[in-house]
Image (tube, rainbow, N blue to C red; front, side, top):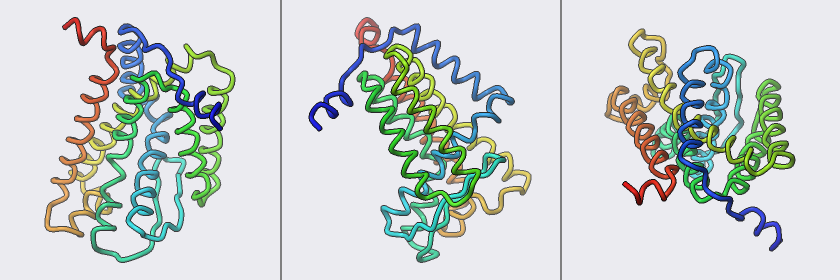
Length: 238
């Protein structure tokens, strides 16, 4: 166990600034370009539904399962009081989860703890797989988990660092776009059951307040992640 833990927390050399910038650009293009976003948006949905599930468990709601759909939507089924703090925090968690996971990944990557980051992602996916309740969702999690496992076992450290950088930036940028899409749907009256509107019904605040809250968390996470991942040598020279 000591050797395993030492391997997990072993730090790699931090990447150079050009690699951080190139990784950020690649992730931004993936999120901004419609076709690539449609192909990868499901990864953000995994983080979104995982956030709902984790907070539901922490608030002692009974978690009945998670479903991931081919249109990149998802739903987390819980049972308990239909109102109250537990339900409110569970509804709050979804849209901020990708951004906060990205921020946590940025912290680990900045320390060179890429192996720990990769195995934390694997653990997260395994826990999600145990809770999944539809075939498509199980398939997506198995494919994603298999790719992450192959990366950890066969890819050189430099490749793992690059993939980790792109993945972290993808979560940070990818946490913003669904919120903007949510607000566009709300303006068209197409999202009456969205997390923001559910929160509006649970509290005295309007749905627009929660959309703004989601955006503030996502924006702060992007800024915080960028600050964490810029090499220390660059920061000290400014």
